[in-house]
Length: 257
Length: 221
Image (cartoon, rainbow over all chains, first blue to last red; front, side, top):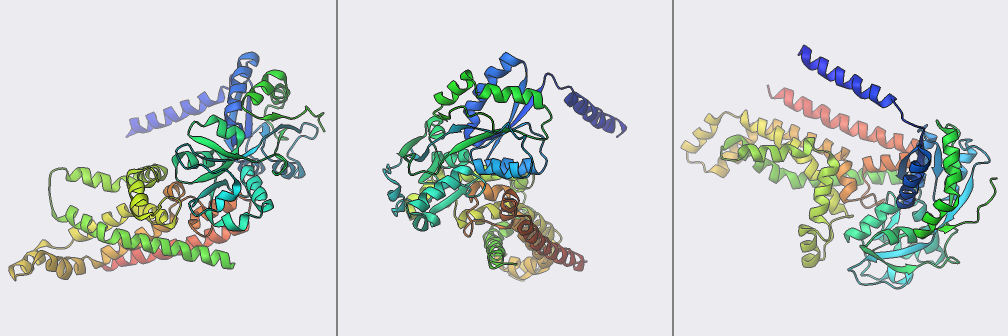
């Protein structure tokens, strides 16, 4: 028994001491789920150049904002919805002057590759369409945008009963891929990374709510200097080229507010 | 509590009850089989039945999602034969709750059966009673308290189920959202009062179920 405890406590001590040895600066980025693939690629290149390490927490922007409010340790917030950054800014959790709107995106309706095609949002009201996956309406920006769009088309009251809320835009994509829902609303960039879905309809920019990705340094950032460097890099040519390659709209580099 | 909150509690209770209806016949048969019979591979069945107790609930959910998804073996059959979808409907809630609470019920019922003296059963048989009659007039009545306690435990477990439910049934307000999922969503949305109200209700129901279950097991002695 004595040996047993020695082993348990010994290995626990080892684990914790090992965790304290942080190599170079590690920048923690809380980013919208739709940025998953592009940011990972950008970070891999950046890590090679700078020697710093980038750690990600990808989730719905609303979920991330809640985690930051609750005191999660993070350096950068990169959301898919300006209102989520507004909420944090109002609470004084962003460093003023660091916030910028970096990217835009388009909303699309996707269906599984092997299901009958839909060609317009009006077809979502068909009886054959039983389940429509949307991002959770409050926490997932893509869901908020999709609802606003359907409301504008006056389709919302008809399709509301078919909505399956998902915890992030990537969960919507997965639900469509699995065939458990008949259609879903994701961003154009998400549809592009999946081989199992097809774009049924791309919402024209004039009809969609304005989709804009804000980026900012957080007030309680443990690594503010390394984080600032990464923010600058995200707005520079090598990074914006990757964003464009994934289908994002790179907004004109606005001067920091 | 608001009307919507009462509705949510009502829905969760109905789902937990429906899952009980599903596991009672299966669970009683399994428990009796495990308590009274010996056969090759019994240990394997014992382990399989108890697995959902120790597996991460999301793993159980994942297995159910594979089985009952529209492209899964069971799900596609149901979809094509009855045009009946399981995933993201209340049916998925019932199945998830049943899968997660079955082990608790089987364990309690099995112990209860094992504590019934076999002599009573043998006596009934010498008097000409068939197996079914022995089961329903001797074994079940004598094991009643243990079985009831197990039922209550399973019910309480079903009410608290989160991981498997969210995998197969999702979180559709008014249609598949159960108490624990609603609490999670309320926290995500920053609606703390709502979350605490629902947490309070869950605590009261769980307390009552475990309290009565304990009482029942004490009375047996």
